[in-house]
Amino acid sequence: MLISRQRSERPMAGARPFALTALRHPVVSRLLADHRALLADLLDGLGSPLHVVLPEVFEENVGELRRAFAESGATADILFAKKANKADCYVTSAAALGIGVDVAGAPELVKALAGGVPGRRIGVSGPEKDDALLALAVQHGCLVAVDSISELRRLAGTARLAGRRAAVLLRSRTAGQPGSRFGLSGDERRAAVGLCGELADHLVLRGFSFHLNGYSPAERATAANEMIEHCLDARRRGSLPAELVDIGGGLPVRYVEPRLWNEFLAQNEPAHYHAAKDFEDFYPYGGQPAAEAVRAIMAHPVGGGESLSAKANRHGIRFVVEPGRALLDQAGFTMYRVQQVDDRRESDGYAIVTVAGSSFSLSEQWFGSDYLPDPLLISAGSAADELFPACVAGSTCLESDMVTWRKIGFPRPVHRGDHLVYLNTAGYQMDSNESPFHDAPLPSKVVLRLGGDLGVDGAPPRWRLDGIH
Image 1 (cartoon, rainbow, N blue to C red):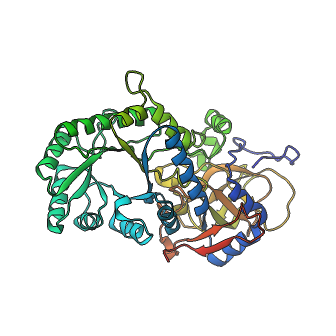
Image 2 (image 1 turned 120 degrees about the horizontal axis):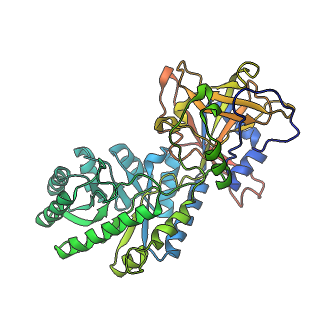
Image 3 (image 1 turned 30 degrees about the vertical axis):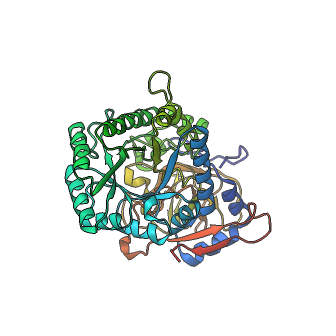
């Protein structure tokens, strides 16, 4: 949202807001430009906030990641990390496209199966899974990432009772993050490989996985190379099917242009936030796109001038990748209705806009941070251009219920009844932290498809409430 130079100026205390204009997919741009009346009707009818989910953009992202791996010469199985968004439509799209789903609990596994994803394409992660989840995973032939020796023994027992062999990944700690709470130590990993051999009637070791914080392609490639070596060691010890290396998720998403992001980092200070809030960490909103990160990971040298993908191919290794946010890039947005405006520009230099809903529906607060891309203002009436600095608050009784702590430079005054649109919220923002606090119902998710070639056929968007049908 660019701020016109022709706007009238008003004295303002503290730091002047600066733009972090959110990038927009063409589908999103089309909806906002041509179908605002429909969006307003949906918000009015279904309540604020409202999550709009766009499976056609998700499907496009799957295609882009597939091409990135193929162009890198790597073989990879894509599993959508379901924890990134609870919407069922994404699982249905995953099933239609032939990709898998990564789940961490029985309810997610049931939803994946109900959405049409076969068990052989479902990965089950999460530490120390309960017996019900292990039983369901064994019955459906899912790939189970095991975090401990005790869990491995329980999985073998479950498989024995079912008369099946369970497919196993051993999640191992990496040299770069040895203090992670997830995964086996070196000694535990070696013992687990031996146990898989002893219990070969009930377990088949398919490969290794790891958990990694951060978005460094080099660090992820280094960890993946460690897992290749673990596969080779397991083969030498008799586990010949060890051919999978699960590199997890952690593929970055670009929300704003890098230039704006770098300017923000250079200027950022507590004065830019309500109550001089001081945040220590942010998601890298101006970072590398996911497809570029895939190419960088696969091209990373791992010894002797050989790339990670070349080494994997030489040893018959397949990759598994579990993107969540990367597949949901631009695949949804969140709308709020403005409920009140407390204009404090004369005293404090900015206003407080209160929306119907809470910050629980924009989950960056869960990570002790702020969701930084500028929301779009859709005004109910006409107003002259005027820089209107404001933060955005939720409508609960909590002092900390701030949807956006940062002072946004809105292009005109905000009024009751206006709408705020937060773009690109499908990845982890929509429902990771939602709560029926104050007995408020959980926000609705509405599935929108333009259809045709970005809707140029003239047909209106098709919409429905999300849910497995």
